[in-house]
Amino acid sequence: MQEAVRRINWPMKHNPNFVDLSGLEIKEIPEELLELADTLKYLRLGCTNVTNISPLANLTNLENLDLWRTGVSDVSPLAHLKNLRVLYLHYTNVSDISSLKDLKNIELLYLPNTGVSDISPLAELTKLQVLDLENTNVSDISSLANLTKLQALSLLKTRVSDLSPLANLTKLGWLDLCLSPRVKSLENIQTLEKLRENGCEIYGAEEITR
Image (cartoon, rainbow, N blue to C red; front, side, top):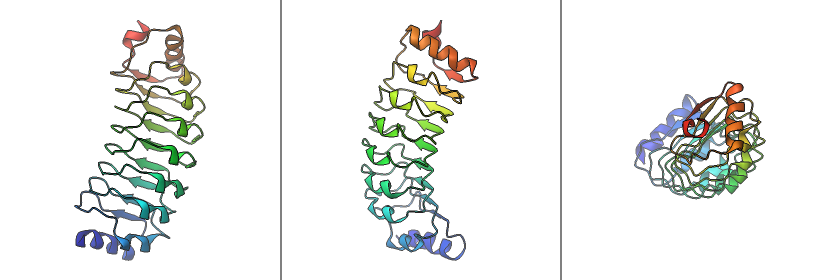
């Protein structure tokens, strides 16, 4: 914990926008971090033993948050972080992302290797540009149909079989379908053809289109 406090004290004097606590053997978020509530925009907590992120609810100016490889399962405190643009949750115990539904400024969201299956809370996050769902239990992506700013999407190792919700995502430039169901339907073929016409680079679609 002493090292964590040291890493917090340094930004207080030099760069109050950024704190990196990643890789430290801490189980709780240091209270000292809240002293930066008015200025902190970037916080890294990846590869720590933190499970309770309730104190983060007070860091309302956060724009970039890394919780990669933590013990976090409850992300409801993040519902208050309306300025959040980038969120890393890969390799966490998160399964319920309903509390993210009002984070309208989210642009990059990483959920690989989590227990997430329902992504309907993302339906109105219209600023979303990058979404990583690798190795999740997601099967229904209909909620992505209106996310027209989406540029990159990973469905690697998911259960998604119907790709038609992606048909009108004209800015989608990168799509990974590797190790996901290969459903050779007319709708899927037409969707992939349309995406390719718009310049999308698609991986893992060979068995669908040939």
